[in-house]
Image (cartoon, rainbow, N blue to C red; front, top):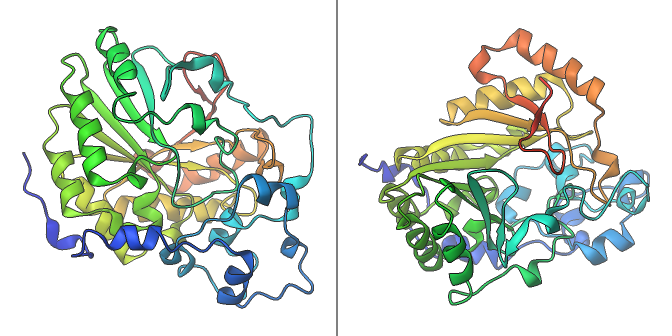
Length: 341
């Protein structure tokens, strides 16, 4: 077991992240005022009536603090601002483009691929990313309590070919440490589970979430732990985020990043190159760059495949191979993601 470098964790108060989580920016007017944004001449200022009603604004204050005041094109703002472009309808978009309802084996458990399952460990996130592919997901039917999780745990136990369990959501780190420790222990005691993977955006948007207790529970797992961060732009990573990521790495987890290629956010070679190098400086390897899933309300983020391939060619010409993420697309029903470059 590795010794934890707990000195890099900036927050000495385990409850600090919960205070931040309970004080999110949820009013578009407040975000506009904080960033001193002029609404008189920018088409992005118009709000999505349908989109906002279905998927309200949620922005953590530490994340908003990294946005550039007065800049409507700020890449962090563009990810969370509910512009009226969300209400533009298109036949190429759907509520469930990945057909996840077909893979919902038990409440809270999805199995898309052989050998691994996904648990929706928490139904909510700290931030509402406007491109979210689960923004229409039925969390009401997939949020088991401790007693109800027994069906999913039994499913994993009874299928010895399942070697990896993925905690996702929502965001699993939006749950408290005691609940997370319990769920991790339930999964970790299943002998044929070799790897536990956690997908989270919390270390990026609220780095204070990476507490000593969280690092301790990761370091004590019998299973190998893989931690997938969700970071799309180098501006998202400041000193506190970098310290949080390094703490997870020191806890013994393999750290990888998956990003989404988003029009108006990071569909520029220089942004992707800097993202890879900044992640690496934070002990994270870039792993996946996803084409956006075609979810209702997200058409304005779509980058076509030909543009994506050109971007990746440029990125590859500037970086060593280990810093070039795989460009992928998820096609429902396939036995793996489709690698494009």
